[in-house]
Image (cartoon, rainbow, N blue to C red; front, top):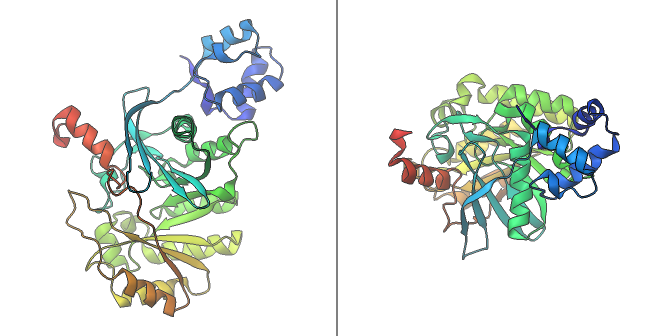
Length: 348
């Protein structure tokens, strides 16, 4: 069977070329073509015809198809639904900020984490994304939109730490000097609290931003809305975060979706401050997106909660809401397409 050439690292590609009797420098040329959006080996004009034929015999090139595209009239946010080689679909969102263009990418088809306020997890996990399928979201969003991507957040569909091997390869690829060459400091990786993944990142000591989806500072509340807390409770999670900071020196961002009457009390703000004591942390308060299947509603105490955190010396910001008119919540566009194709989610 043919192999996925775009998922190979420089070292792996160089070894494959060596076995084909080709010099190592060809690897850099091929990576450059792939990261410019080449859809076939025939486009690689600085390679010999014989080499292009050998590559075509051994490898394939992933090229996603735009299944749907929604453009916000409010702020220019673009949401893509990409169809993959196997017919599965994933979402990518392009957002414009004063500091540049940020793309939010998915790491899995679906998600098995089961967070009760998230549309991504409603139908469960189908499979992991390959490094090439993550890279393609950045590459083809840039090509289709005409907007140069300067920042990446792995906060779309899926749990990156549940697909960490492929995610780490993707990070190496997207940082490659012959490719998109997006620096680690411009990349944020989100987790709902998978501690072994945090420990692995700590050992790697990458210069990216670790973002933890907290959403409740006490285990009782967090376990009700985030099943992952039953495996890795909030006390263990904060201990891992403190250790991560001590090792890497990098500040962690804590994502906090504000849910009315669930996690927006003053005592919960006070508990966040207690957990963060001795570690600089940034709390990013998120206005909750309405998900049809969820009974949770956006909090009315956003400003009061932010003020309470700031009274403890915690840096707290409110995330700017983008794309509110285009199925803003992760998983909504994919879910809508699945329902239309299958006549309802229960049939999938």
